[in-house]
Image (tube, rainbow, N blue to C red; front, top):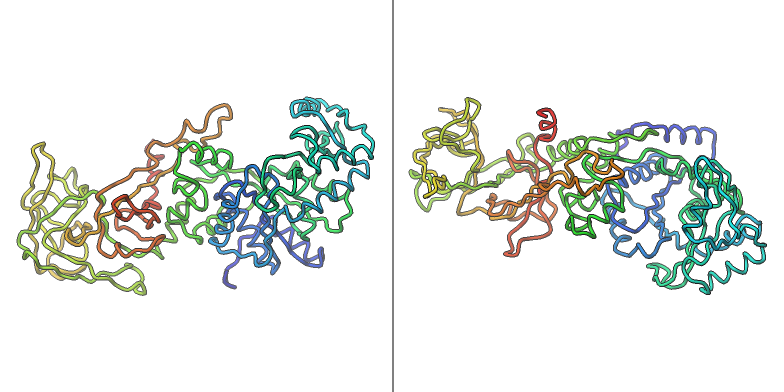
Length: 562
């Protein structure tokens, strides 16, 4: 971020400003981004990444990347690596401050022992169903587990044997002794440790068979690392009393301040990692990086830029109120970015052959064209022009349907962009009456984008048939047809999957320059939208391009028409 840029203010920054003014934490600001490595990061995580790393940058503080790896049967190294890649891709670095909660497993164990010795934690042998039954409800207090009356000595012995692997999964858990009548359900003797056999942790291997719970691990890890402001989403607001209780009842000097903000809810998608995992595991999408997914990997493959996502996070802001953001806001951010950064190219997605009969056979002209209409720094490229070209089938009609139709009609004229004015002299059809070819003539005196002399209203794009790159183009759309696919808690979010979220076009013809495009390179296909070169190719080695976004918000128009 340049020194001229100023981040939008928000209530968290106001809190930090007040803390620094009071010299709290000696004016130091330390944040952290603590993902669980059980899936790929999504756009909601990007909001947290931009907030935590952005605050650290702006206040000349630090931001740790810490993996909450306390649930090894759902975690693996692939997720660890993808998370690191995504954070770096967004433009943030953690230096030597990459940590794992598992780095602190021994310390966390010792703090658990400290709570047991102080009579503030005990071993419980209720099963999961009994624990729920004993917890009570929002209107009724819970009742004590039989294990609550165990002596300190017995609790220490059982906890030692749990660590030694003597007991089966679910036989015992370690719980905090707080208040079974608390109006806050999180304070009704929450579980701190559980037994997990038969898993190999991606960092610690088989060294442990007991694992700490998130609510126990999180505050202590923050404190060990000297975090000053622990920024969490609103669902953790009711967990803050437990966060504070734990730190107040162990011998640790640092006590970070937990501050909650609203999570990102984005229309036409889901943000639950569990539901995203379902989409992947059931084959409803092609993987975590499917361009229809709201994952950072999916957005990157679709053609989104780091700047567009950071801009989006700035625009939606940081608040305490839950809200849902329109998909159009995200799409507007990428349009704004690519409009100024993407080179222009011509691509014919629905090819129709056009033969210019008065153009010499075998002749090829190289026509110079600007790579960007508003920015000369993009330079120019040479486009081959020949007797046979492809135009888009939608750019021709035998008879104009109305006065607004400014493209090619039988007997009419249009300009081929950056090239000649042509006239359609004959329409060739197959046995079924479908148009398969146009016979045309050109005016040799009209070469150029703005030649002197006769002008026509219509300008269409084209590619030389002999020089075109044949490609597959994938038109991605919103993954769901409903703006809130998981709003109905009793329903199945999968019922709202959009059957047209992916349309694959084969036999597309792209201009020659696109044959040299690198993976991830972004372009505006003139009059079609913004597209990105995919890292895959077809079985016959043809390149693949993904549509990032249309040139305009077509969904907005659909909504208005409805």
